[in-house]
Length: 631
Image 1: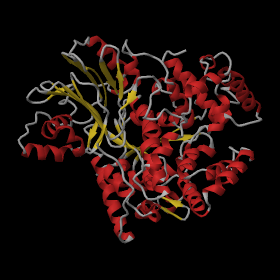
Image 2: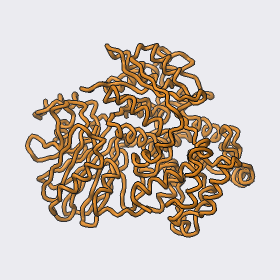
Image 3: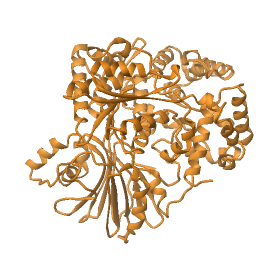
C-alpha cells in the first residue's frame, strides 16, 4: 500500500523538474513511510511513497521492467500475483523480486492494457512505456484505491493518490467547481464524477486511460462493470456452498503479507464473518481490535468481545469519548475534499488502534452494498411494490402534494418519517431512491443557496447522478438498480474514501475481502429473495454464516458508528455553528444566504430544530476550503 504521483507531457516531451514531483510525494508521505523514489525522463516523472507489505526489501519503486522499457508506480495489492507469476514465467517472463509490482509489469508487457482484467485486487497504477512514449493509468474494479488527475497549463497531466499532492504542484488552479458544491450538499461527499476543484477529475472505478505523447487526451475506457441482469438458479444449499467458497477464497487471499496482519471487529455480521473465516484459516490467533464508546447507547463493543472470545482472537479494545470534536480540522486535512460522514472519526480511531500492533487489517466493508443489507433497500423494495400498483399520474399529484405540506420529522425512524416517504413515492423508483440516500434534500439546498449560486448551478441537480445511473443500469428490478447505484456511487465516494484516507493517515493497509469482484459478481446474480427476504437483508449471507455465528450476532439490528453531532452543536461546537453564517470563510463565498445559515445555527443551538446533519456538512465544507487555501 502506497502513494503515487506523476507528471506526463502529452504534446512535447518537455523536461520535468524532479523537485516538483518530490513536493507532490512529500504531501502524501503518510501513505508510504517506509521508502520513497522519483524517476524522470524526457516528458515524464513518476514518484512513489512506499508502505512495505509484500517483499519488504525487494520491490522498491518506481520499478523498471527487466528490459528497461517500462516503468511502474503502483498503489495497492494484487492478491493473485503468485498465480500470475507462475503463468507468466511459463510464458518466458523472468522475475528478480518476490512481490506483486513486478508481476504487473510483466502482465503489461504480455497483455498490454488488457492486463487489468487478469489482476485480482485493489490498485491504482501508472506504467510508462519508454519506447512507445505512452502512459497507462488504471484503477481497480470497485474503486478501493483513488487516483486524481489534473491537466495543467504547461500541457502536462499531473496525477496522484490524493488531492493534496496535486495541490502541491504550483500550476494547479485552486478554483472550486460550483457544481461540486451541489453534489456535496446532496450526498455528503464529492462523488467520483467530480472534484471539489475545477479541472481536477478522478479516474472512475473500473476504468483505464492510455495517453500517447503527441496526441490529445482520450476519455477513460471502462474495462469492468457489474451486471444485475442475470438470475442464478439452484437450490439454496448449493448457493450457500458457492457463497462460502467465494468468501473463504476472498479472505485467505487477503491474508498474504510479510508484515503483522489483523482485522477490524465491530461485532456486526460482516466483520464477524471475516474474523470467523480468518480464524478458520489461521494457525495462530487472529489479531482483532475494536473501538467502543463511553456512552452505553452508542457502544457495541460487548458484541465484538463475544465474537473475539468465540474464535480465540488476540483482541484489543479501547473506549473513546464521543466528544471527539477537537479532530474536525485533522479530519478536513485528511480528506482534502469536504467529507461529511461523521463515522470517519471513529474509523480513524480504530485505524490508529490497529496500527499499534499490525500493518494490515481486514475489514467487513462491502457486504451491505452487494447483498442488500441497508434498511433503505428494504424501504425501496416496499415502495417499488406500491409504485407498481399505483399509476404515476396518481402518485405524483397526490403524494407530492401531501409530502409538501407534511411536517418534517428527521428525529423519527424512517418508517415514521411520512414526509420523506410521501415525497419518495411521488417520483419514480430512481427519483425515490436518490431522495432516500441523499443527505440534504433539494428543498433544503434551494433554501440555503444565494441567487448568484443558483445562477451558477443552473438546471443541474445532484440527484441526477443517481437517477441517470439507475435508469441505465444493467438490472431487472428496482432493488437491483438501487444496489447498482450504491456500488457505483456510494461505495467509492463515501465508504471506500473513508477507509482509504483514515487508514492511510496512520500508515495502515486496509483490505476488504467482501469486495472481491468474484463475490460481488455472484451476489449480483442472486434472486431477490436470496438477498432480501421479509424484513431481513443479506438473507443468504446470514444463513450461510449460521454455522459460525450465533443468531443474536447475525440478526441483531444494524448499528454502525454513530457520533453525537446533534449534542456537539448545542455544546462545544455551538460557536462554530454560529460562525458558519457570520465570520467564517464559508459565509464569504457568496454561495449561500447568510441569514439562512445564521437561522439554521440559531434554531439548532436553541433546541427548536435538529439541523445537526446540514450544520456538519457546512462545517466540514468550511474547514476543507480553509485546508485547500480557498477563502
